[in-house]
Image (cartoon, rainbow, N blue to C red; front, side, top):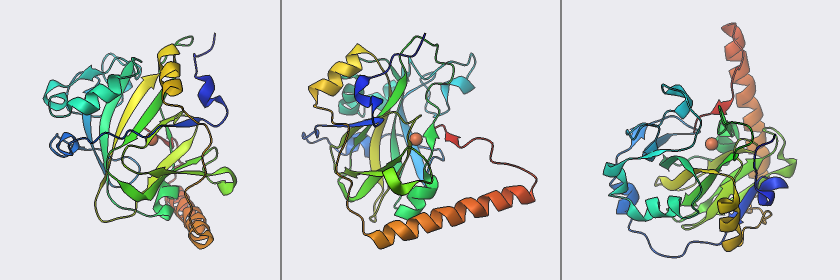
Length: 257
Ligand SMILES: [Fe+2]
């Protein structure tokens, strides 16, 4: 047995879909309820679907009974305020697990490299069923910001940087790829993140919106790239030293977000 995965994601682990180019009222992400939830960076999250329909963001496996990141329960108080976003999460017809809006405060490329993480999307996911991937639908027009993807956390040689204007749509195997956003600006970035189960529905959706599995990296000057890489190494070493001083090791670099 093996998990059902999308052929479109096999080679690079991501696809970029056509831009969504209809306006959405910012109230859909500004007027809903956020909870403090530490992910990669200074973040809060507003769930639209959660394990039990409550306004919280814990992994479904941390609930009783523990279960995998599928069959998210919609939260009427939130979806009523964000009907277009809810519709967008449901559009492929794939099973939806966690669905929430991330609010990310401004940061830098160096912060982003330190924040790179893999998601824990498939814990308790039964073999033979669909592999859970994530969709990212950027809501704010963050023209100086970009998503960073790497196969290996510390290896810049195959880094991909994907632009994040309003309407950018990505589907990413975030359990495979290390990822985080570099967000330049003065205002928070908002993005809808949905766990989708791989299968024929998702494949059809990727095809419908012309998913491409390679894009030109968002341009960043070499000096910033080099400084970011050096800072990532410095922070990783500093953290390892701090943990060693307490007699601990990094046990789990996977994030729940
Ligand atoms: Fe993540």
